[in-house]
Length: 313
Image: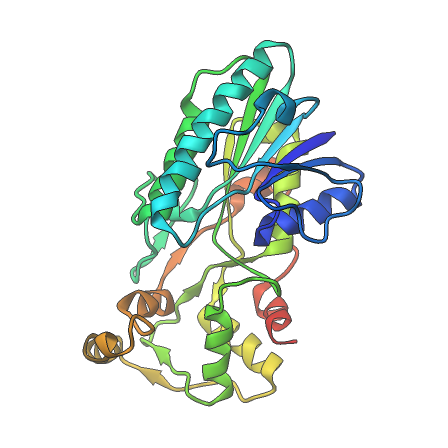
């Protein structure tokens, strides 16, 4: 198998490149600046998906699989060009490639954000849940999913879409979980609301393994899979406390009181304390990964409460 990896320098993409290399997969990686710590066997193609300098026939040549892990999470002005316009251009090239008699499978890394924000009331989200994205990132990623799944393509083209929840791992750049750990270590954490919330996370190793399964298992063709390893918020916090060597927090504050306080102090914290952060701590949305288990025999191997310790090693 020869794989084209887009977003090979990203948190998930870099891990995927190493994973594929360990399994003897031939790798071509597209990058603007090269691929950090890439094995010598990785074929690096310098190019920018946002530009017009890519030789698509050469980029696709001899590839059997495309892993699209490219994503912009900070600059909203770049999200539509990268997630939607670049996907359209690549699909155009892939259509020609398939028409020339080449079989090609596209594995799209997306997000459960396609289904809308998590909610404080109980909500079970499956692959049959209608999409309702909010926010530029979620909207444009969902648009890309639709382009891939609905466009009429040659018969030799196939796809799989993987929608993970909050991905974590030791090399993640998002510091929200480490900040949460700081509150626990300093004895400043308290639970919000008297009904235990749900923590929707998935370890990066499980995401990479699922991406590979989507590329190699024929049953994944034409399918969308949600991927999360949900646990309760108390379980997550207890795991963090164990990793940090401190007592498990027990204090609970009423949700209405916390939201009132946040509404007052939020403008003074420059966005560090927001209602959205409260939402994450009181969410009762779950993303059961039953479809991946039933169709692909895939089950996450890294429980969140235990593997969260990797962030504090």
